[in-house]
Amino acid sequence: MEKSLALRMRPKTLSEVVGQEKILSNNSFLINSVKKNMLFNIILFGPPGCGKTSIASAYANEIKAHTIFLNAAIIGKKEILDAVEEAKNNNPTVIVIDEIHRLNQDKQQFFLPYLEEGTFYLIGTTTSNPYFAINEAFRSRCYIFEVKALSSEDIYKNLKRACLDPNGLDNKLNIKDEQLKFIANISNGDMRFAYNTLELIYITYLDKDEISDEEIKEVLNVNLNVNSKDDNYYNYVSGLQKSIRGSDIDAALYYLAILCTLNDIPAIKRRLAITAYEDVGLANPQAVDRVMNALNLAEQVGMPEALIPLGFAVCDLALSPKSKAANNAIHSAFEYTSTHPFKIPEYLKLRPKLTKDYQYPYDRPDLWEKIQYLPDELKDKKFYIPNFNSKYEKALNENYLRLKSIIKTANLKDLKIKK
Image (cartoon, rainbow, N blue to C red):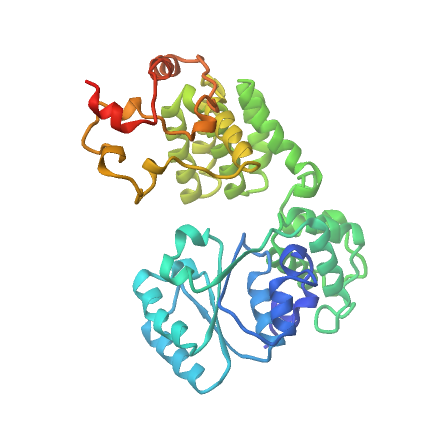
């Protein structure tokens, strides 16, 4: 039985991978390790269909390593042991584990000694952030690279190649370039979806000399007016956030509805989460918490039910008072630390080289607010500029003004003596 188009078109070398210039440029780590014939333990993370497994397969193939493919969602201890034994008999071996974030803690621990001994090399792929989804001991033994969603142009190039390649459709599908670009546009960065869509059209219209736009629309059951990430997608994302910031609930719901036609809940979730913290923030922290709960529910239930919690989140954010105080404060601090050397008072260090009289007074909570925490050069520096846009924020900033009125000192010995 013939393999799917997506599998037949999987790159055999890293040079065949389209896109991902950041991690696959001529002097990148992955390319140089192939040139030097050196294998490493790697974790690739990014959205579905961006080419993580393809990169892993091409990387192992170029170094001519024996490759074993496992899926963390379905493997048990037996499959792991079998893979380890196979690796011992085939040196070098790369074990590619898809969805590695689904590997529970026990199984991650089980792999550790074999990674230490170099029994095999590991390439894990995941749609989750490995800094949260994978335990530290496992993660510290791997190099981590982010794989980005493909652009519509990258997807179009791959589709065009698939139409012409003897291993692909071998020029047997009479499809127009504009139709290929349409498929690329609706694929939302997912190459697997694009290949599957092209194959669906190929099988459906195998004997047709010409395929109309309406026939493609009929097979896919999508609206040809839907906008891609490379066309108006990011404009609608921008419109959503700006409408919420401007408290225009109807406009915000309009742009949310457009984005929901793409069924990209993770992207909508990211934008609304950032909007909640950036634009509402301290003016209504309870609304931020409610929105985060709603976004998690939307991801759990999927479309079309996700419309309900997403709509709730947008309404809550649009009607809430707004404050960018927290957002502005951390960006101000980040901008400063990005251009200045890091300093810290000695008494704040974990193990200060000071006599007891000058050390931080853990047992004196009455003194904590009187201590100077910034270095001397920055003692009067202000990153946080208060807003007074809600009752909660007004109460918060009353305490802020009280704290700012306290005279702080770096002389802890004298502070301890004073009553």
